[in-house]
Image (cartoon, rainbow, N blue to C red; front, top):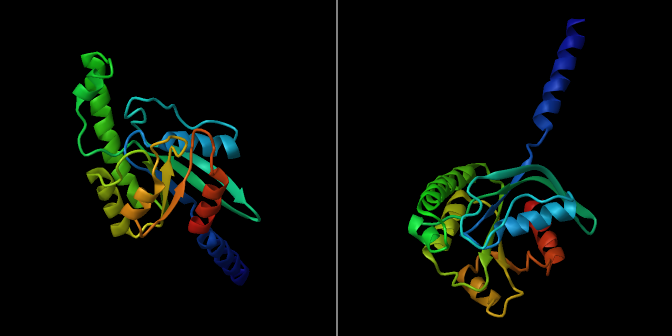
Length: 210
């Protein structure tokens, strides 16, 4: 009887330890790069629902948003992960920038405070990430202090990275400039808004995270 119990508990513990923790896939980048737009596209394609709200005003996402189980497929391969949409990382957040967008002073100060906390939370969550998608606006200069800071943090943690050059539907988009800035990473040009090259994005994501 004792031997049977030992065998039962041994098998139970083996089963528990064999279970791999759920992969956490984080969306990182500066404000207004299109992280939440891409998160929404992923969730719409595979869950039939949106993840968060978007806005032309920076720092619309000011809290980390977590969607627990997302499964994507490409060809005969698939991966499941927890999707983490993070607030845009910035080195400076000034409430006066929100005043220029037409916000009242009280609202602007609250937004700046929440956005600052969001940046801190984004960086804290890096310790839990298994894979990161860095979403950059392909129409802007990639050689920014924010982008270099993000990439440096990811490299220090040895986290696998896929760089998304978003907004390729716009005339000013320049994927080659982003490839030149971060040659150590695979860069995929997409339009999260219109779904351009989204299949190629899913294929590369599965290669990276599988």
